[in-house]
Amino acid sequence: MQETYIQRVAVYSLLINLGLVGTKLFLSIVAGSLSLRADAIHSLVDVFASIALILGLAISSRKSKNFPYGLYKVENIVSIIISLLLFLTAYEIALEAIKGDHAAIGHEGWILAAVAALIPVPFIFGSYVVSIGKKANSPSLIADGSQFKADVLTSSLVFLALLGQRFGLPLDRYAAIVITFFIIKAGWEILLGGMRVLLDASVNAETLEKIRSLIRDEPAVSTVTEVIARNSGRYLFLEASVTLRITDLKRAHLASLRIEEKIRNEIPNVDRVIIHYEPLSKSQLRYAVPLAGLGGKVGQHFGESPYFALIDIDLKQRRLQGQEVIVNPHKDLPKGKGLKVAKFLLSYKPDVVLTKESLAGKGPGYAFAEAGVETVQTEAGSLEELVEDLLAGLEDNPAN
Image (cartoon, rainbow, N blue to C red; front, top):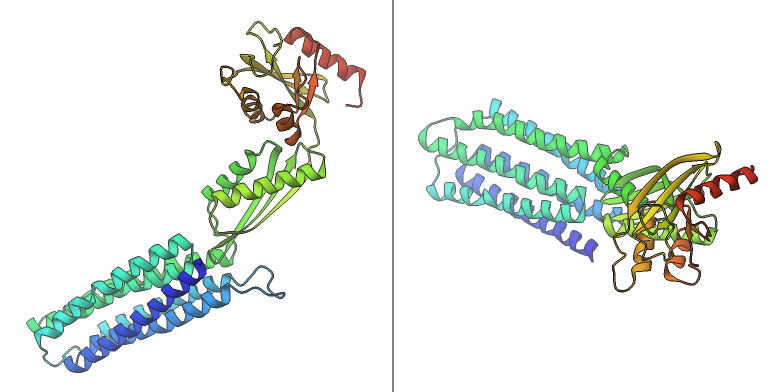
C-alpha cells in the first residue's frame, strides 16, 4: 500500500512539473521574457528529475538473486542525481544573471499576476511531497520535494525581473546571485544525505542507541557486544551481536525473535534484522534472594517479600564482589504480583534466583526459565548465612 502511494505522489510530481513547464513557456512567449524562458528550462530539468524519481522508486522495490539486499539504494542514487540537477540549475541562474540580456519586451499586467500566482504552487506541493517523503523515509521523495520548494526561489526571481521591467529597475541580476546560493545549499544537503547512505554512514547515533536500549531490555540478554545499522533507500538493515545467559538453542532463538519483533515495532522501515548470539562466558554470577526485612532475614514468600538482595560473586577470585538491596514495588498487588516481581527482577539481570518456596510450575518460574535464569531453593535463614554458603560452595567446586 505504501509503495503504491509513493508511486502516485511521484506521478503527481511529474504532472505538476509538466504543467509548470507549459505555463512558463507560454508566458515567456507572450511576454518575450528571457528570465521566464530560463525558468521554464529549469522546470524542464525538474521534469527529468521526476521521471528519474519514478524509475528509481520502481527499480528500488525489486529484488533478485543478483541483488539479495534489494535495489533500495537506487533511491539514494536518484537523490544524488537530483542534487546534481540542482547544481546545474544554480549554474543556469547565475549565468543568466551575469550574462543574460533582460531588456525584455513590455508586457501586460496580467502576466505579472500570472507569474505571482505560480509562485506558491511549487512551495505548497513541495512541502506536501517532503512531508510524505519523511513519513515514508524516502530520500528521493524528500529530494524531489526540496527541489520543488527551491523552485519558489527561481519563480520569485522571475517575478522580480518582470516587476523591475515595469519600473526600469534591473533587480533580477542581484536577486539571482542570492537565490543561487540557496539552491546550492539545498543541493549540497541532498547530495550529502545520499552519499552518507551509499557509504553506509547514514544511521544517526540516536537511532543506534535506541536499538541498543531495545536489545538490552530483553531479559535473556547479558551484554550487547555490537550494533551495526545502515540505510538503503528508506529501509534499515541491522545486525547485532549479543551474549545471552541462555544455553538452550531453542530458547536463544526465541529470544532473538523477541528482540527482532521489538525492533520492528519501535523502529520504522526495518527491512532485515540479524541477531548474532552466543552463550555468556561467566566470570561472575548475580544471585537474587527475597528478604523479609532490612535485617537480612530471607523471606518465606517470593512475591510478598518487601526487599530483594542482589549478590555478585566473583567466580575466579571466589569472593563477594558486591551486594545491593532493592525495594519490591509490587508486594502489595492483590493478584499477579509473582509475575510482576519476576519481570522487575529480570531488569537487574540475575543469573540465579534463590527462594524458600519452589517456583516450579508457577508464573515466575516460567518467566525466569524463559530468560535463562536458574531458580534454586535455599534453606539459609539469613543473607549472611546465604553468602557464606555460596562462597563455601565455590571452595568445594573449584572448577567453577
